[in-house]
Length: 142
Image (cartoon, rainbow, N blue to C red; front, top):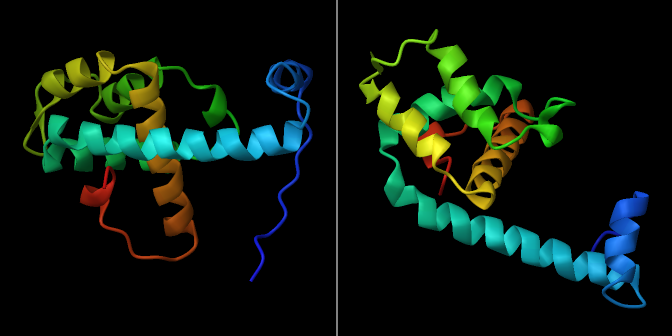
C-alpha cells in the first residue's frame, strides 16, 4: 500500500530554510520530518528515567485537557511548568504523592527539545483519547 500524500503550504520563513538546504523542498521536508520525529522519540526515551510514574501522571492530568488547542504550537518552554502550577493551584507542596516543587524544577530545567518531546507526546495522547482509545497516562513518555 503506498504512503498517503501529505501536502502543506510553507510559510516564507520555512520556505527560505528549505531552499537553503537544496533544490527539492518536498524531499527536504520529508527527510526533516523523519529526523524530527526520530529526535522526539529518542528524547522521550532519554527523559523517562528522569520522572517518576506519579510525576508523569500529574503532568498528563494537568496538560492533557489543553493539548492540541489552537495556541498550543506557539507555547514556549515555560508552558509545561505554568500548566502544572495552575493545575495544583499554585501549591508547591505534595499533590497525588508528587513533590510538586521537584516536578517544577525538573520542568524548568528541560531543554527546548525535551519540552517539545513532552508536548508532542501529550498531543499524541490527546488525539488517541479524542479518537476513543483507552490510554494509560503512565505511558506518556513510553
